[in-house]
Image (cartoon, rainbow, N blue to C red; front, side, top):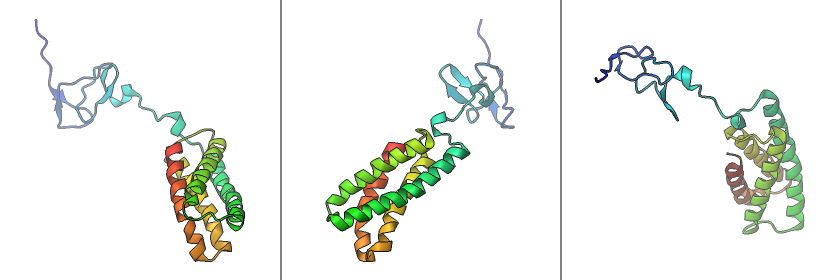
Length: 164
């Protein structure tokens, strides 16, 4: 005996005919509605798609991250100015300055957000790096301060790689 699939309209997309059913509740689902799970196609209510907690920031963590990025940017900017006055940090050494910026801001964001990841945390880290770089414009001639753009680029890229 063969089973004949009953073709019905999808309840979520009227006018779309389907023979597919949710593997849990047997609700008709069209290909646009289905969510593939390890146990078969499911409807949205049965699939229970949740965002990973590591990428979910609460308000308190967001505020802590913003404050940490701002204060860290000011502190690291002051340290960067001190190093720039004592050592020649341009050119090739900018790569190492950028790696140091990324490492410091990755650790700052880890501490402030409780090891959270995602685009918001990356944006906060890059904002902190930009604040640190912006501090140089307060002390140095803009032509000299612009030489830190390579360090900022390297730092932003590595921070992105660590916090995405």
